[in-house]
Amino acid sequence: MNEVTGNEIIHQYLRHNKKFPHVLCAGCGHGIVLGSLIRSVHSLDIPKDDVVIVAGIGCSGRLAVYVDFNTIHTTHGRALTFATGIKMSNPKLKVICIMGDGDALSIGGNHLIHAARRNIGVTALILNNNIYGMTGGQSSPATPSGSTSMTAPFGQLEESFDTVSLGQGAGANYVARGTVFHVQKLERLMCEAITKPGFNMLEVLTPCHTQYGRKNKFKGPVDMYKWLKKTAVPVERYQEMKEEQRGDRIPIGVFTDKGNPGLEERYFGLKKELLAKQQAAEGK
Ligand SMILES: Cc1ncc(C[n+]2csc(CCOP(=O)(O)OP(=O)(O)O)c2C)c(N)n1
Ligand code: SF4
Image 1 (cartoon, rainbow, N blue to C red):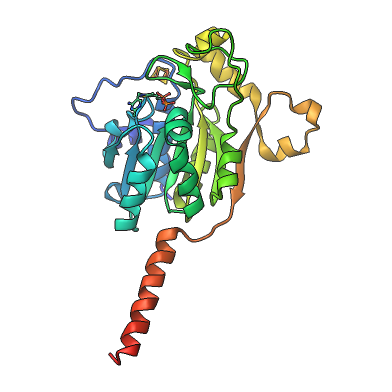
Image 2: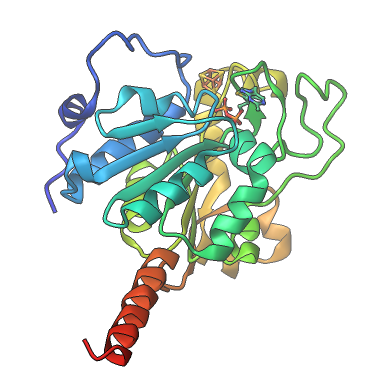
């Protein structure tokens, strides 16, 4: 692996063109995710041309625009459908989907569970900022119950999804959670998610102060990062904690790692096997 040397690496992967300046608010966690993704791909020595970034719509979806990989900025909730087609047409490519919590869990929720069930060889990065950021702060399926949003000014009554449990229940091959505060750990998880076979899901907790934090008593973006520092605990430690110690703690780390071959591998393997049988039967 190449040594990760810092921010100068990032500039080798950015499209220095009219797409800048970027649209992200100061303090937004999404930029940290993009930095981690670039450093992960760099440290894994994957050529730029072998990477495809497939993004949905949202502030998170904008990330695809800035990077010099093969990129496609798709429609809201449909990133995984495009990713599935790309992977099946060229299985050698590293296909990485970037989706927000609204994108992946709400309008794209059905695609998420079926991509996990099928075990298509795609890495799904779910940037969970607990809100629909781009459209003004409406509640998403990841908005915590009791918190305030533009569409729940008196408090969110619905329960939120646990993204990790959802991925596990749908059969995802690899399921992990990290945060943009714990960047080194995030990069380790990202490297794993990109290299493991099958459908790999990494939820990243990433602050949106503009649409979520300030409506929920966080004084500023820094307060949100401090909250991540305080709240996230390694899953190994979380499992040893008693129920009353857990409180609002959120476990981070690897939750599932099956290592099963992806659908595309099995599909093309079967195709080869059937062709060989057919040729043998025809005496070729
Ligand atoms: C079919 C469709 N429905 C709704 C929208 C409007 N829309 C654009 S972004 C967005 C929410 C994005 O939220 P999220 O996926 O959580 O990403 P974030 O902006 O928070 O990163 C919505 C509802 C759309 N573009 N297309
Ligand atoms: S609205 Fe939220 S998610 Fe969007 S760029 Fe601003 S801080 Fe980031």
